[in-house]
Length: 396
Image 1 (tube, rainbow, N blue to C red):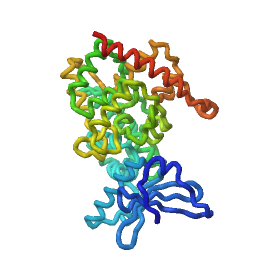
Image 2 (image 1 turned 90 degrees about the vertical axis):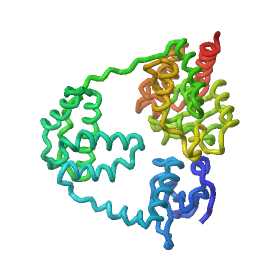
Image 3 (image 1 turned 45 degrees about the vertical axis):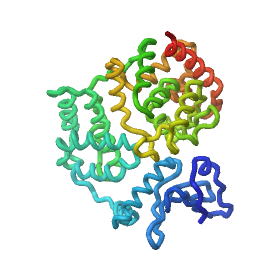
């Protein structure tokens, strides 16, 4: 049972067992009991060994879990074991899914079997909307007796009621449809009453792009907020990547001036390679000088082993200090894209920089045949924006 400190590089390049049908478990030195299981066919998965008899709990495929998530999952399991629980026994018990009778029963199984596979923020959002909107109205209904008109009445009340919330109505519709699709796949529900109901709420896409003077003001405001939020917000404006993906940037993802975001961490589910321009490298150098030892570039000051969270709370602080009352973090990404377009960056390269399939013109055909990594084009685009950004923020 070899032991090693698991890293992304080790996991990607680990030698496969040479014996057909063979398997090897590499035990992590960071979280005791956590192992990377590798088979001769190249299948890689995380598991946890626990208890005196060495019970094994399979966490999941290495392609589906980041190393950080696997470690956190293992820590949670070890906590349960210390408090007398047996995770593997509970897992076996959950496999015997009872036939749901009501929508509340379906929601319970949905919470247990579907939500753990989603991003934590998405899982919390689903649970909140289900508990606040769906179950109070439809929870007691037999799962197969919910009719289209029941759903329409619920959605209309949300979209057009005393406190109209059309976007909320659309989100509730999507989640309820997802619940029924899950139920059909599990043999719990027979049909999906939401399937042919169109969204009732009209959504206007946000188009906010910051002016040059607003960018200068925001940069100055970022300097006034505490680390690591200051550096993170600057990095968002420099590189135009998604906040959720940038927040969990790790030092082992950076080599020279290249930042590689693993596919499992991206919304597009494909690896993103970012050539870092001068301003980004300056931010990283400053982080190295002030940072406690952590795997994360933007580590929590309270729990250095984890990345920061609560971005929206600090974004509210930026709104107050900058007096830009409609400031939103995602607007930084849109602003970067807009200025790059003004700097004559072509649409395909822009899409590659943003890792946006639609903007890049990617489809199944191009995904198969276009293997060009666009690294130099992305470098040129980001450097062009870097020079423009410097003129904006440093011009007196």
